[in-house]
Amino acid sequence: MSPRPEADTRAEATQWLGTVLGLSAWAMFFAALVFAVGWYRMREAWPSPRVPTWGLGLTGLLLVAGSAALHLGSRREGPRPLWATWGVWAAGLGFLVLQAMWMHRAWWTEHLRIPESGVSASAFHGLTALHALHVLAVEVGLFACCWRHLRGADVRASWRTWALGWHFVTVTWVFLFIAVYLP
Image (cartoon, rainbow, N blue to C red):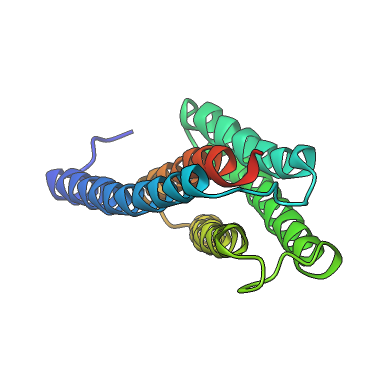
């Protein structure tokens, strides 16, 4: 295998730095939201989300499993990490389906509605939906990366960027689970 041209290496480094800076900005945004939720939890009674905590934890395990698969896939050379990404993509879709199911249950069965149920309902629905949108964006990026790979493109740099995005939504989920969903 011949060494990669210097221009490709610089472009990849620039892409990586941009991704890290962008995710850092989102991390600050989510940290501020988690801080606000914590502040409200200290000021007033915070009802449990009326959705089984084990079910919400199970959805998070799908993200953790996908993150572990991406980490293990990044240690291999060749196309194998990209093929493993299809499983990660399926885990992400499972996460989104379960999230939709829990939000539906909270809204219709448990009557956790906005604005009647107060700040806790806003935090539950708002942060769950915002996080799900981020997972969906990473899912689309991983799918596009795999699709381009199937068409013969070199997507190693893009794959690493989207894998970092997946790790970000996984870590964000852990903080949201602690701040919003735990009683």
